[in-house]
Image (cartoon, rainbow, N blue to C red; front, side, top):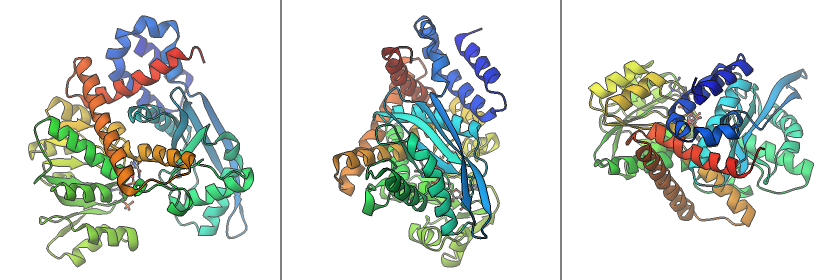
Length: 444
Ligand code: NDP
């Protein structure tokens, strides 16, 4: 049995009932096989892989709070502090009813590699709760956030672990948690990122993931003798990542013809009017179907099907597993030349393999959406320096980071004999830095 297979078998045996975690470990280890085989003796001698797949620490706690009817509610809270070899743990908090230990371990594991790829000194973690903010009053959300932080505060800090937002945790939740942390500890410090601009937040954080996605896409296209100018693009979703990806695409001269939400998709052959989408989604918080009321030449279709529209470039920016093998075949048949993942794991394994085997340029989320966490790390830097950089300064640093991520992924793919395979390249480049740091720090 190869070292990779041995370690995977051990993960499955020791972590029963954690399918998402198993899946993430399998996908990553498979793509690291080249580098692991090349260094097997060295890694085996210090059980490097066994330590790499095991979180350093998992904190799990109860979160009691009182709802508006006076009933006591109990949720589960977690923080997975996965790997601190290259820096303070960093990764989002997710509040969603599906949250469990397996999902947080999968996300934390992926985060270790993503954070490493940014080139910044950030370790990987993830946390959250099975609390569902949807349908809760502001007071209930505040009560929950305060109770959650009343336990979490003792495990985090600007030099220990610095969480951010994720699904269900936006500016409102970060604000409530920051307030409670400050109240308990008396410390005004950069312990959370994604804060409001009046209390330590960073300019560009809102735009960062979408802008970063387009910066790295542009880099990938340029290196493969294409450009964004005049390209027809589909961007799925119409949330934070999608909106700012479209904004940047339009600045580069690309034409976005379709977007969606979880109800259906819009097709505007003349190019999506982003001000209309922003008004619907950011101001009125309404459905994407409203778009056709304001742009009657556009067409709205209920349900799935956005990937059936012909395009040059497809950017899945909505949710996990939204683009499957059938979609991939359709995109290729319609002339799609490139795919970059704005969302986390939006492309199924089969679809990813299809793109790689059929000459479609493919940039995985770990690299493509790393602009969000990178800008969070820039927020930490500004907090530590007690300074705020201008929009242009942060944007320039973000662009640099994304260009470097592309270079690292491309270089690693080349070095290991799979040029153009940015999935393998991103995993290898992220892993090498963490592995070197772990080797240097001894058996810890
Ligand atoms: P938002 O909640 O702002 O937007 C998500 C969008 O996707 C919404 O338009 C939503 O529609 C749509 N959507 C959700 N489920 C489906 C579905 N099944 N089919 C079609 N559309 C769907 O989230 P973000 O934009 O912040 O995040 C999107 C993805 O990017 C997630 O995977 C997230 O983990 C990832 N990501 C985000 C980062 C960030 O900085 N925001 C950083 C790195 C990764 P509806 O309104 O109907 O729910």
